[in-house]
Image (cartoon, rainbow, N blue to C red; front, side, top):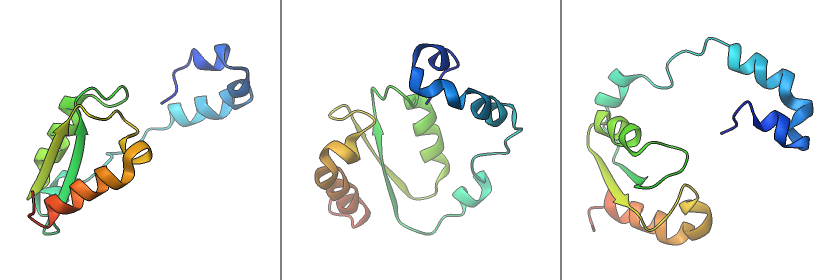
Length: 102
C-alpha cells in the first residue's frame, strides 16, 4: 500500500510518481465477483489478522462471509506478513482447517 505523500518522503519512489498517478486515476472494476464467491464449491480457509495494518478486519470478514463454505481463522498472533514470517505454521493451520482437522 502506498500513499501519495510517500512519493515526497521516499526518494526511491519519486521516479514512480507519474506511473502511480496514472494507475490511481484508472477506473478499476470490482475486485471480485460476489456471485461467484457465493457459488463456491471449493474448500476455503482464510487467515484474518485482527490487527492487520493494511486491511481492515471488517473488510476481510465481509469478503470471507461471501464465500460459501469459507472457514475463517481470526488471529492476533500475526500481522499482515504472517505467511512470510511463519509460513509453515499459518499455512499448516489453514490446510488443517480445509481438511476438517481444526
